[in-house]
Length: 431
Image 1 (spheres, rainbow, N blue to C red):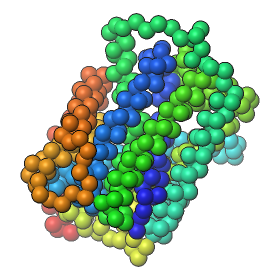
Image 2 (image 1 turned 135 degrees about the horizontal axis):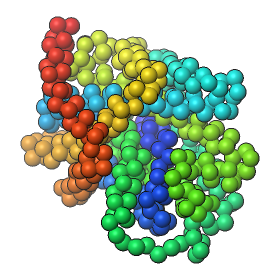
Image 3 (image 1 turned 30 degrees about the vertical axis):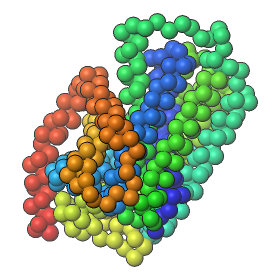
Image 4 (image 1 turned 135 degrees about the vertical axis):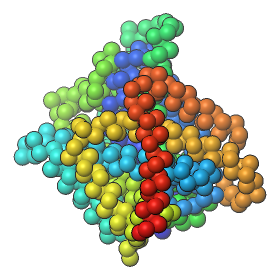
């Protein structure tokens, strides 16, 4: 069985990935004020914290493996669960593939013999972590704990180095310019918040393992709140450190602002340090993605929305068929990476849509089953849940307006999902 330590590790490992390296440069391009820059990170963190309050109640009330799929299926019906479960599973497998590719690309820069072998390296990494988990739940848990600890230590070293070597960067008087409120600024705030919320995504990692957590009524809320607060602190410290080293104009538009900061701190060794930090950071992410995608497919299969063999569990507690299929899909994303980019972008729309359905599920269950045992009751409900729901809806509206093409694809995917749902039901019955 898994404890609070694993819950913290899977949240940190799942959440802190390539996004924290890519997002600051995009935000700096939209927001030239360091205080607005930090403000959107605080707002994104508060959204995650409000979401954690709601999901803590659902996770302890329905302690079953499978993540948000479980809540939507129980509260809103099989079809809603199908949409949440399948979009979550495919996008998590895709994320594992994308992370493995980053490891492959960066490894080629550090080790000349691996240069140009991105796909091969990424495939080996993905398969290696799948094999580690095949041994059993304890192996997967230990791997997650170790890799997440390495990630946290690596980030703390980078943060400390930034404050030691920096000279004020964006916080100096000369670098601080007055803010003019106009339509461009408001648009920039919306786009920045979208990027930040995507970067925070993953904070719900522990609920995928609810039935494997010891004393879920106590440990799931502890892991959720502790994990979210830890991620908020790390993100704020990283961004303050970046601003302390670089003027915001030097961050703007950079794909990897952390790499630019590393070069400013470590000089000619900066690129090597940054790439090594990225690889260490990605290891815990890919392990977490494998763990989570496996639990989602296991839950879907157990409930008759896929082949029953998907629910097979080995002596070590690992759903082996679900793990095998998740690893295969991740490798397909690696091999056909560019062709699958649109698929991932479209499925990203469902990340926040899934949170929206979870928050709605909490309202439904509070009304429909007021007397059901709830080891943890969401603090401040309905106001805190309502704020999280409103934030999700505003995010979805912003996504539709700012990325209409992919949002339309997502809505088309939703429209065709119902006949696929019926076919899956028929296939499961004949299995």
